[in-house]
Image 1 (tube, rainbow, N blue to C red):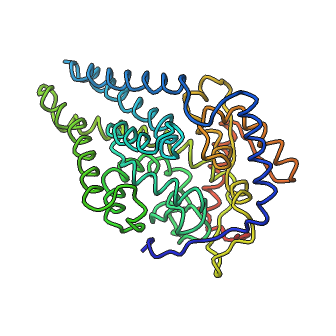
Image 2: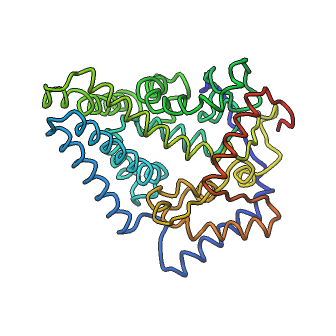
Length: 366
């Protein structure tokens, strides 16, 4: 069981100078802009706009007599739900949307219902497991072995994986449905990690979990079937599945490439202590990538500036665009490898990585 995995430690001495410079740079930046690290009015306006469009798409879909319009509007509804997750849930999970941890928790509980992902399970997987143990076998659940996709050189190789650079989008598209209908339940039962890591535990935790899942089923299936009896129920299920899979593919393509492209993976040290520091680990395993148009990056919620996020997880993503050049300068100052790719470069690196893993690559293991 993952709950039995021991905690790993990093060489804090190595990170001491780097941490001070990064923190000093952050404080200097915030002071110069007379700003704080939480969401501002613009972020809250974005939250309101996305909620409005998400609700409007859903309600309008339920008033359609055309199956084509219903399907398109339902797809828009799930797309706006994904944008809410990217722009709001991510920050709230790190307690940097609102100043209040309780407010962040309940915000996530409400706005994750359309996608169906349990926010407490995702918080543990992302904040507690992924961030400190990025690309560490058995610890980072984002690279958990599934028997279909080989994501690290330490995982079992099967002959068909030589083709994984062709079929991996199918696996990526199944990520959200797998989380909603399988992984969340496993996590809540304590099959993946210790349930003490949840914010809501015991009976109260189960009550919140089941209410949220029931709300998702109500929105996804029951209301459409009741309000739109002219549509076959199997068609409603199909539209739901395709919408979830599309949003899943988009999210996984954009997020996992930030770690795949560097292709640096680790096994837990026998003594439980890494020789390098936690911040160095982030540089080793994560990178930033850029889009041509800034307005597209705005709606990605800082997802593309993933290294900056790993270095400053306690800062709202609205600051990442200005913090990223600072990170690049600090990396040069400390002679640390820093990468920033274009979207095309990210896709090429993903394909090269998947080909390498599919060919049973085992050299240069970390």
